[in-house]
Image (cartoon, rainbow, N blue to C red; front, top):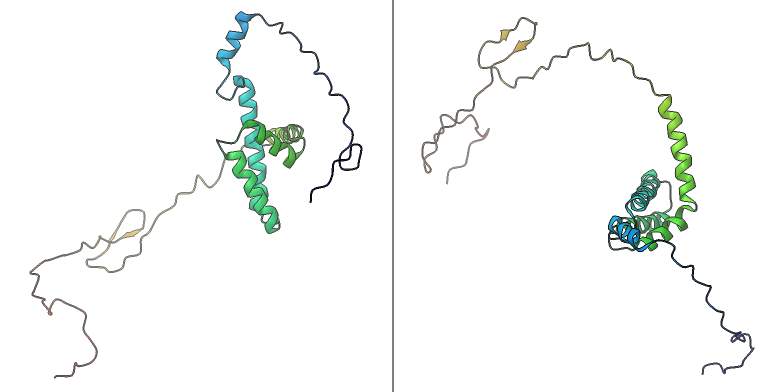
Amino acid sequence: MPPKYKPGGKAFPVRGKPRALPPQVPSSIPSSSSSASSATSTASGLDLEAENQFELELCWCIQQLQIELASGKLPEKQMHDMDKIVNILKSNSAPIVKKRQVMRNTFGNYREKMAQDEKKFRKQVSNVKFTNSTDAEMKSVFLRKASAVDKVSTEHDEGTVVYPEKTPKLQIKGLSSVDSTESSFKFNFKAPEV
């Protein structure tokens, strides 16, 4: 049986007056510029710059999740949850609001973390130096191991030995006749005669 309604009880507190909505701020943008700004907005309702920023944040979050998944140090349940989160973030049908909510719940202040990563990688990039490789000066020679030598090998001027390629000799005589003299395969026992 459902509980009885008791105003002011623990399960049903007394409701106060409904609050009034906050006053709306009138739009100070002229109508001519609003049509121009809607032309630059994309299908998601964001302008081009905001959508590019969102895509950058989304890619960063997906990359961080994939790094964690690839480490293999997480328990099975957390890996399963992270896999679900990656699928939500990669989904084209998931709304932007849900993606942002998932990103916020997973990473906290992900924009601040992105800025810290960017600063860290800028320092690392400034320390990168390019040097000439000494391995490029060494020339390598590829030698193929010959399975069978039909003719005498010839030596090239570099000292490498090259064997002529063996061409397959395929002869079709007839479907029903088999020539046993050309066959090199033989059994090492005698077949019993019947």
